[in-house]
Picture 1 (cartoon, helix red, strand yellow):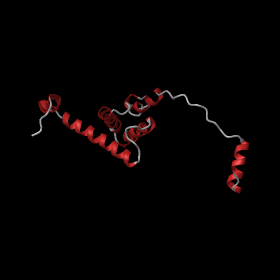
Picture 2 (tube, rainbow, N blue to C red):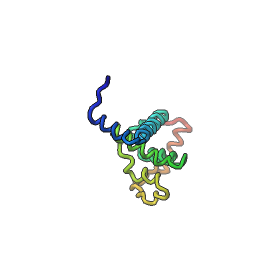
Picture 3 (cartoon, helix red, strand yellow):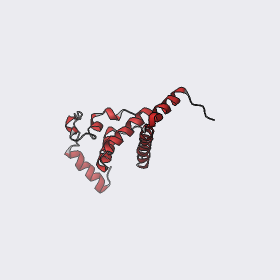
Picture 4 (cartoon, one colour):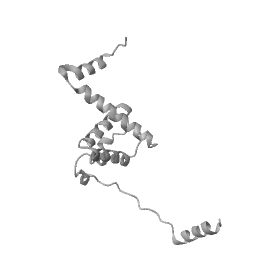
Length: 135
């Protein structure tokens, strides 16, 4: 027989008292978190260190798939954060904006550095190297 510690007993008591269906919610969060993790592994990504843009696009896809998809994905991300100490993606404005309709206006774009372009001379020399095989 497995002995439970007092915290586990209290959690079970809260989940099942008075005919509560909280246990269904908890198991749903767990299943959704598992789907997220497995899906990211199938895409050959590390699910615990994802870029915030990838997480936001995941929430957006979930939101577009069904009426409660965004909220469900958001709850799964909270669960993953608590269980695996991942970055708290839910607090990121870009991720959060994918749940609320029209909330993208509230997102402040990060300051981006100017890109560097090669000079025309560099491009012509590179072309010569590629075409003629010169180094």
